[in-house]
Length: 366
Image 1 (tube, rainbow, N blue to C red):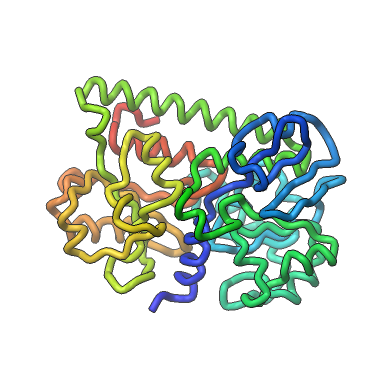
Image 2 (image 1 turned 45 degrees about the vertical axis):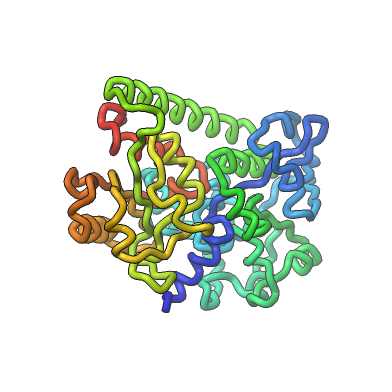
């Protein structure tokens, strides 16, 4: 049986693993949001300044006349939302935060998250804010990784109840319909879309664009370095390293290796780093539930272990994995890395791209 924490992660990850973002509206509007997902990442939607800003979140249109001042960030086994707020310099608006991995690829971010107020709220079994406690916090904006966080059957305040209490709500685009996210997994562009959405809501558009521009440039530079490294190696376009992405110490299925990542934003990150997910086709869901025999039958060139909860010794997990499958090229070359928040939806995907590229193509390492 999965632990309660594992169950939380499964629910959120299947919903988009903290991974997607709301799209933008046409250029003749100040509306941004999930109503127009094909425009995700477009700057045109909110080149204007100030308020009002209208945000369509999962079919609910909300108009902001001013920047929210009492923000609650729900858990959802994510750090995407809280990290985006921190990246935009909005930590002073957070009155209660439930998100934390206890680690980050961004220096100081984990510590900054730990310093955020928690609202002094007794959380439920999902380590999140139950209905009455949420309403007592008197938020004016509540962020949830998926629609799961607003369902009454889960013990949470609904979006309707929050609206009556004066609170708007935000769900990244592919958190609206958890099942649809499996057919259309999030990408790095969805991370940028969330930056733009919240940049518009809080009227810090320039900060958002600077973050996005810097990230895009770093990913482009890494991609170019990878192309040069592959050219020197003489490797063909289809001959890319096969990478295993696996969550450390997470049990979600019947087999020993039930937390092997199959579909999600990590595949976009791997592609930009000149790699391929070795198990992308192993499951129609975000995770593959695999046996040891299935892993042994696959040539794995490198391993990315995702540290998703505080206290995990992800390096020890990686070492054990490589010892178990010594036939892998990854084991022979001792080729693995540990990532946490940068491989999810959030403002730091460029760090994951750089880390994976440096692992596979050492000449590209920053």
